[in-house]
Amino acid sequence: MNELLAAAAARLGSPEHLVERSAIARAEADGVSPEEVLAAWAGGTAPPSGALAPAAPGPPGDAPAPVAAAAPPPSPEAPEPVSAPAAPAPETAAAAVGSPPAPERVTLAEAHRFEAVITGATAGLTERVAASLPRWLTVLFFAVPLIGLTYLIAFAGGPNCGEGGQLSVDRLTGVVENCDGSVYEAGGAPGGVDVRALVGEGSVLYAAPSSCSSCHGARGEGGSGPLLAGAVLDTFSMCTDHIEWVSLGTDGFLSAGRNTYGDTGAAVGSGGVMPSFSDTLTAEEIATVVFYERVVLGGQDVEEAVFDCGFAEPAE
Image (cartoon, rainbow, N blue to C red):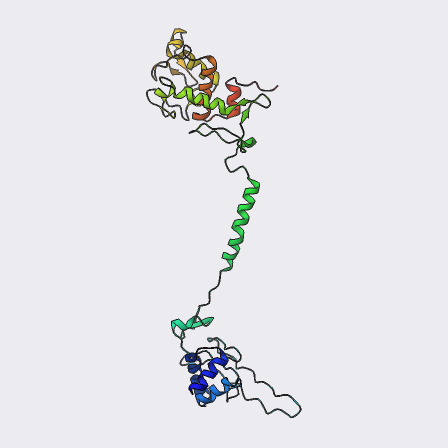
């Protein structure tokens, strides 16, 4: 039997222990000896019962699958017919033509050899053991790169590019530039205003010793002086009023008989003493630091601030 088993296993390309178990199951089902089944498989012929590759028996308690009847002897003129395989039971996997029937029970190590195995015979539960990629995941692999490529083509400058292609002013660095890295000029070109240089100079003036940052904070968060970040435009909607307050300060307003300042009508001196910078800074420098406060700390539109603070004249 060992020689027949080895020959049948080599013929079918399956492990000997699986071929042996299948031969025993087939022999019991057909009422023949395992040696006869192995001899048929080793010689590449049909088993003695006449079924070429019947299905494996179903779960215990179920009726066995019907076995195909033997084909009638061929006539001298007609070629010998080949018997058709029996229909498999609904809960079992059909065996391939020319292969031994699938065994009724397999171990975990043997399960990967079959496309599906019955893990709950009574309930008819089938567990797929063959690896497969879900269709939605396959679609996702193609859709995500396509969406990314479309975004790069449609928004080459990135998501922060504002109207006209310029970047918003960075409130931490004060950088204002076009999406291609060139200098952003407001007020029209040629002859536009170099906003990057204007913001850079304003930030230096703002952070100088005994200047704006010493009272209003390095980022306009407030201190001994009022809050500027996000609030300066509420106090001074017009840049000219803002420039006047920085130029004259508390003493200058009181000397002129003015007791309030800004759009809110705040009392002069109520928020502390505002020094006058007209003696230490030129008119252009005051306008520059006010521009910085309004654009970087207050968030005013760059183009609007350029005209509002007098750095460019709007076209007629």
